[in-house]
Amino acid sequence: MQNPRWKDWLAQAERDFEWAGAFLYDRVFSLRLVSFANKWEKHLSKRSLIFAEPI
Image 1 (cartoon, helix red, strand yellow):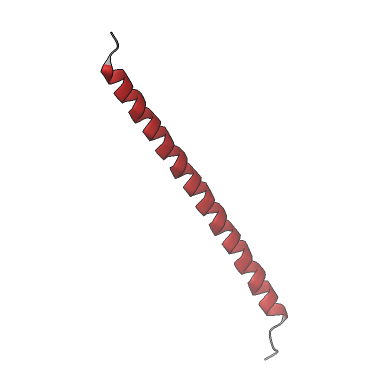
Image 2: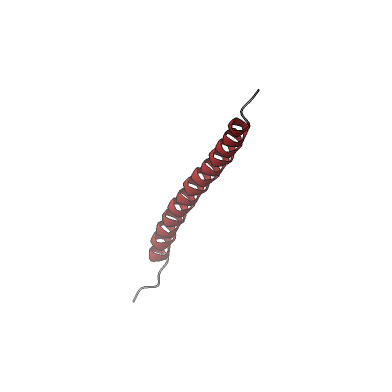
């Protein structure tokens, strides 16, 4: 006879693992997006300095 709690524990572990994977994916993606945005902002600010009108 199998222990029914084993299946409950396994199902909960699978849900936790899926949640952790989704959380880590979101964090990595958001950090990469922020990094890209910062680099793009620096690029645009350098470019605007080149094409800025003289004072």
